Amino acid sequence: PYDVLVVGGGPAGSSAAIYAARKGIRTGIVAERFGGQVLDTMSIENFITVKETEGPKLVASLEEHVKEYNIDVMNLQKATKIAKNDLFELELENGATLKSKSVIISTGARWRNVNVPGEQEFKNKGVAYCAHCDGPLFEGKDVAVIGGGNSGIEAAIDLAGIVKHVTVLEFNDTLKADEVLQQRAYSLPNVTIITNAQTTEITGDDNVNGITYVERDTNEEKHIALQGVFVQIGLVPNTEFLADVVERTPMGEIIVDKHGQTNVPGLFAAGDCADTAYKQIIVSMGSGATASLGAFDYLIRN
Ligand code: FAD
View 1 (cartoon, rainbow, N blue to C red):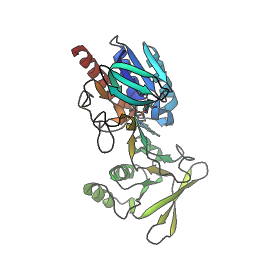
View 2: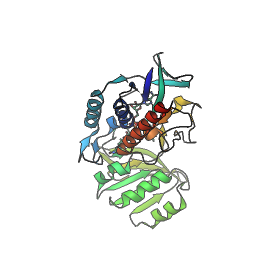
View 3: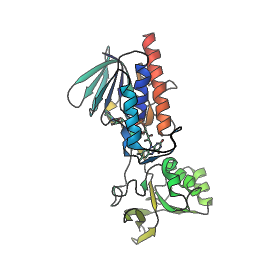
View 4: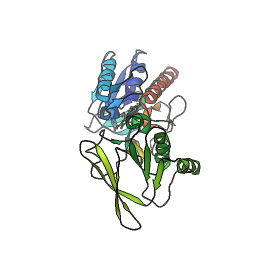
């Protein structure tokens, strides 16, 4: 069996595996797609010590670093079930079962798509999902934020300090964001909030050039010319396969303590799939290191 089996090969999982292997213990990584969300990212400017890079380049460095160590990398393998008997048993989609004394879940998350024409076509060409990451690329431009929950209104406030103008489009007739965030957003001169607005298309040529929505009360179609669209309608953790083996929040995030341990002894979680604050590459690498050191502590006590 493995000492530490890491499920997920993004920044959190890679960091966890390297920390484990450096303890000289038997370590494996199972990843549906090594690299995770970073593979889908164009420009990265907030990974400290690297002024600017691209997702696939950062993934190549991750892979190179992981390969420096004695780590079994099982790429293109999807975990479908986990159980704890004497050991943890992880079932894969291909029918195999892997056994381990401890497991670190780092299966990340996915942004919920609005599924309108233009969204896929203009991803990384004006369609963005992370204001912390991509906000500065839209300096001085006009942008829209789709979604009026906490993440949408936080993004609008954040972007208002960088871009020329932000239009928030909320489907429902009221915003779901906390009152204090709403007040702040309404007080900003360069933020317009439109409720009851159903986004129907993101338009563009080479890059985004506008957004079309329907006023749900009048059924009238409107178009706004702009250069960026931030989709903020939820981040969904990839934790469905855990079912009720481990405690999760109502949103599906795995609940962890400050050592990255879940309510199940020996089962740890890190990165975007856990209920840790802020979903960023640098944050997920830190939490991967924490979970791995937590797992090592667990192993030497059991
Ligand atoms: P992920 O990167 O999501 O990796 C999850 C891993 O788990 C993958 O290998 C996946 O294949 C695997 N997996 C999932 N389910 C299973 C399963 N059942 N079995 C086996 N493997 C599984 N952050 C920044 O700091 N700066 C940026 O500029 C930035 N830009 C971004 C741009 C975009 C378009 C996106 C989508 C995200 C961006 N982020 C950015 C956020 C950042 O990518 C994430 O916070 C980070 O990748 C989270 O790392 P993770 O390892 O927790 O999860």
